[in-house]
Length: 508
Ligand SMILES: Cc1cc2nc3c(=O)[nH]c(=O)nc-3n(C[C@H](O)[C@H](O)[C@H](O)COP(=O)(O)OP(=O)(O)OC[C@H]3O[C@@H](n4cnc5c(N)ncnc54)[C@H](O)[C@@H]3O)c2cc1C
Image (cartoon, rainbow, N blue to C red; front, side, top):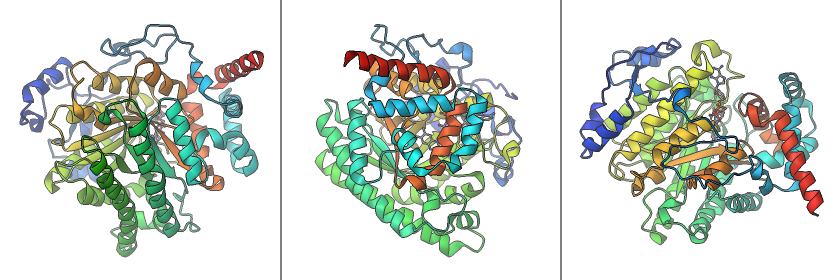
């Protein structure tokens, strides 16, 4: 990987803050290495590169621990944190997390284990997936990856998550239209989304505040994920041509997304009256990232929403997504920060690695060449954002809220070990860093974070909606189960679920 090592240096804007000395201390401790955006492993592929090339602010720190810097995971636990995080010390079975699931869910996990036994079975399952009848999908996998079909079912899913110590969720009405599905009804999607904000997110967040025996600022925010392709007919075309003949349709799409963000904003105002001591937002609107060719339109949408809802010295009510597998993402992050400063708004960010690697046609020119490069870039991105959030006074940082959306144990460990330190014990900004995993994915890691390390700010992404519409989403999960959660899938998962089921049988 081509990394240029520069002498340790600090972004000048960090040095101008009143707590600059603390910032310097924490940064020099971690020996930042900066990577110029044009040194990223792939050549920058888009116009972004040309427009940004001469801008010296386009660096993000790569405080990425190498494999050697990370303590090896213990056999009993998928994660192993810095000493500042307390581990109970007792030996916990790595399959303990399965006890939270009912028998039907365990059978679904077993099916997933069978599908991911080896790459040949996985490839076969992926090929066959589009032809599997919906009834079979619903009976076997829908329940572990989706929250349900109705508002009530999703509310119940939220309460079940709470029983597992997960005190909020990111709900997403999943009606996929990224390939230009003309059958979608944007009006219906936005109506249902607003209903879900008022009918699920707001009451669920209130219930969590009332039920959890925690400080008001230790309850994670609730999120509603907005898929930009759901907000217009032929949205893919509109997003691709938002400056090129589709201005009116794009303005309509922005207006629809604005309706959802306004509902989030209003819910926050109501909750803030009831609980004035909370500093982080109660509920947040998150713009999901799509395939690469739609992203310029999505970035523009995000910017318009930031401008409208993320006022300086206020909590961030809108979070946009950056896909760190994109080789241009380091410069994009710097560009977004610069635009926010110039236009006087704050940035809320969800950092993901990126879900479309299997379907991106231009993969070799737009995505980092290796998984390691994506990992390094992801870890550098979250490090940079966390430092920005934690090292400044309440609501003073440009980057005001971060969702570390990942199942990668090393990334989650890195984020947690930066946030949950003695030094940050009383830092109220830490409630603006939240770790998110998809429902049904990396449950062992989620369990470990919550039960063994008492990490409170963990949420699950809960897709909901008609099973037929979630098929594309489920296919992506199947693909990811093969290349993402490798070690705990396949035969180990089959063995673990069988063991738990047999154990229950004997107990009965
Ligand atoms: C809460 C939540 C919200 C999400 N929202 C979105 C969203 O809005 N848009 C979106 O696109 N995705 C989204 N995702 C999915 C996400 O982008 C990843 O696909 C998924 O989380 C797997 O990545 P990981 O961080 O868990 O890490 P890992 O499992 O360690 O990494 C897998 C990822 O690494 C990357 N990768 C794999 N092989 C290579 C390679 N050879 N070269 C370069 N890179 C490689 C790919 O991005 C792959 O998905 C979301 C995930 C979560 C948890």
